Image (cartoon, rainbow, N blue to C red; front, side):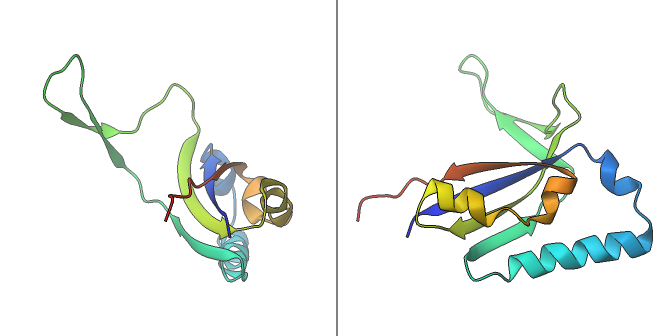
Amino acid sequence: MPQYMLLLRENGEARTKLSPEEMQRVTEKYMAWRKKPFVVDGQRLDEPGRVMAKKNGSAATVTDGPFSESREVLAGYYTIEASSFDEAIKLLHDHPHVDFGSIEVRQVFARPQ
C-alpha cells in the first residue's frame, strides 16, 4: 500500500498560549491519533537542528538551524498508509495539528522491487 509523509509545520506561537492542562489534552490527542491503524510512524522533532550544505564545490559546512525567513518550523512528521492521495487527505480530517499549523502531505516514492 502506498505510504505518505505528513510534514507538520507550525509557527510556534499557538502552543505557547496554552495552559498546562490544555497542553496535556493536546498531547493526548496527538498520541491517540498516532495509534490509528493506518499510522506507520511519527515523532515530534526536537529543536534546534543543524543544516549541512556545500556551496560552490567547497567542503560541506554544518551550521545551527534551520533558520528561515518565516516563523514556520518543521515540528514533526507522520508516515501513514493509504490507498490513494485522496484517501490520505481524508484520513487527516481529525488530526490535531491543523489547530496549530499546516500539514504538508507527500507520497513516499516506492522503489521498484
